[in-house]
Image (cartoon, rainbow, N blue to C red):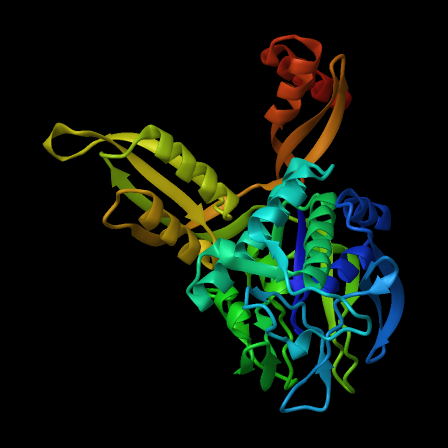
Amino acid sequence: MRVAYLDCFAGISGDMLLGALIDAGVSLQVLQHAVAALDLDASLKVEKVDRSGISSTKIQVLENGIPLGDVEIHNSSSSHTRTYHHYDHTHKAGHSHTNEARDHDHNHTHGRSLSVIRSLIQSANLAEPVKLTAITAFELLGTSEAKIHNVDIEKIHFHEVGAVDAIVDIVAASAGIHALGVDAWYSSPLNVGGGMVDCAHGRFPVPAPATADLLRDIPTYSAHAQQELVTPTGAALVRVLTPTFGPQPAMRVQQIGYGAGSRNPKGFPNVLRLSIGESAGTQQQTVVVLETAIDDLSPQILAHVTERALALGALDVMSTAVQMKKGRLGTLLTILADDANVATLEDLLLRETSTLGIRIHHERRSCLDRTHTTVTTPYGDIRIKLGMRFGEVLNAAPEFEDCRAAAAQHNVPVKLVQQAAVAAYHTSKA
């Protein structure tokens, strides 16, 4: 199974993740294509930099060739500055944001709403999984800001310049994440830094309010630097990845990438390290199970909740027909999740269903290593999902979506494509 591990000893931001992806081997063309698809006159500048003796990759977003995203805010506890991807809710005309000053003038008193950003990403010529990841990240950002300011989510506006920077960071990172083809993500606890940070609405302790909300249920700590180390964009991307948190799992590391932050403090390598490799044997994991039985809800709403749960990071969702009290027929809704997503999924169930309570508990599960191979059939290339234990293939199954797309293209039954894919796989192993 192909796995990735994020070592966030210096926190994480969108540009740091982009740099680590490139440094670990993701093609720059993949990221540039994703940026071009947005049609925002934006591009990526890539350079090698030194961070406390570590050679790493630095990414900067350009709009019409002009750098974006480097808003320098002095930390009250340090002489260093930090990069801040600013976004904020709408204010009355004439309200000024001193922290949004750039080296070039932009009139950005009006910003893009979440619905506008969602439409922009949805209309881009990108793969659907990339769009879903990017949109989910923005929804998480918007939800946190709306909660903090106690306003409707559509009243949250991402300022024009900051929006371009954040959109590019998130969409390009989403493209790079999917290009890696990783089956499971892992991460260290996140170092959030320390001290105070100046935001548009005053001075706050690190992490800033939006970041703090996004980091709910995620293991964090504060060490080494009196500066903000985790940005809202970085926190949102971590939530989208839904990694398992802890020490690096047993894995054969094949690629290592270092993504640089904007600052270069003395004696503290301001980098994000990304390790990619193969795991061996079965994976022992602990998952959270959320379940509730419902007998008075429309099947249409249940289907909607299932889709939303998966979009919000659920590992799996199952519906089981059950008989409840007084002989009523009902549905047992079961959701598997990582600890980091429990609060979000709990909120989904309480808000979207008619349940009055949810059972939540931890369970151990043993998983085969998973990877993919591709076979060629008369109907095109089909991916085969492999389940392995200590290098031995125990299960091999064609990816259904590949088979369905090929069946539609050639106007044949899906089962015929599946049979051809299985035959091609066994032939290749003979």
